[in-house]
Length: 528
Figure 1 (cartoon, rainbow, N blue to C red):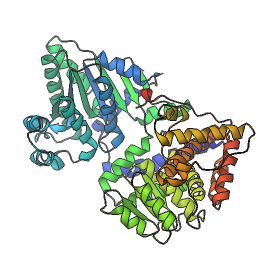
Figure 2 (figure 1 turned 90 degrees about the vertical axis):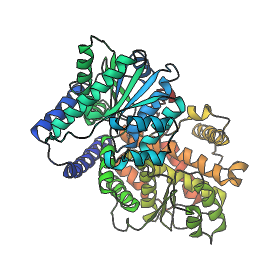
Figure 3 (figure 1 turned 135 degrees about the horizontal axis):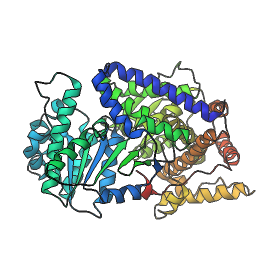
């Protein structure tokens, strides 16, 4: 079976397993609730056309009301409205934000908070945030910080359940109508203001909240241009997979007034829901990811539960971790410097996974490196600057590949990105190595000597080798997608026993083998 087909089959199997677990928590849908779901799926009856961030922004600027979908437990869903609003506000200053997460009875308290009259902790306590909403405040907080900075009003759109209603569907319809009345009133009173509404994605089916708003406006003989933005719908994702576009396309225009954003694989948002329900310890969350990544690489699970997890939230974490390697001075200095700015890191032999935040991308990256080291890939701490650099390059290549297996939408910086920030010493150094790679591929001997700044600076050594490793890992994943490599070929990467010479040898081998693989570049202005 072609490697791409194997990847897709594994992804579908993973999704099915996570869906089954999620359904166990959600419970069985009633026929009425099933209809509510099916109404939402109608917006995805056809894929539409590939779009772009500039086109989406232009359509938003032509709209009076924008409905932006949210998946409450998934941090990527909360990042998208903020990224969009940061672009929109450059060209339109009159903006009001409507949110499902706040009860309309707390509007005055919300206004006081945004005006700086109460502290964040006081505000959350006053509105009983945990009881009325309960989803991670830190995921939503940046939106409120943005509104404060830009002096934007936030409109609270939610309400308490009606005690006379006894079915889930009736409550959803009641909440839709409650929010619709507030949205219509705000739009009527502020005709020149863009009202950007952030609400659960299911509510945004054209026959749900948008229709209710339209009916209220029609009563007042008011016409408004509206736009709906859905996020990470499963049906849309598999439509992109069918066209081999899943890791290259983020934005699709489903209808003239409906967009779909696909910036993450559908199983990731469900996994976020399960983690929110179970509230597992970090160790257990990582183990769930390890099991998925191990499945890809056909690794036995035996022994893969023997690791430690540290996060930046833990006090004195750098001192605790470096104490494990204090008998190796060169390595200890390197690790201490890296932990000060790295998003994630794995320490071989001690089996320590460090995560600045619990990001699925970085967790999958370090889980993959842990599996490799567990299989005997790294048997001792590196000593020389060269050994440290090229070992990290190889490990980050494997780690990025593993994270792409988990999330095909993950991206890394490309050569054009480094060209765009040459003032950054690390970016400049990456370009030096990319130039050496090109010379090597033209037949010249590869210059493996480290620039002096890389030899002396652990920070630069780590950052440059990481970037080069990510680029190679991206090509490995693309080669799988294009059926240029098999999963069996990739699994052999775990059999390599690493030292400085072998790391360089493998680096050059894969540079040559993947020479014809061209990774598509997407400008930052077109990314969400």
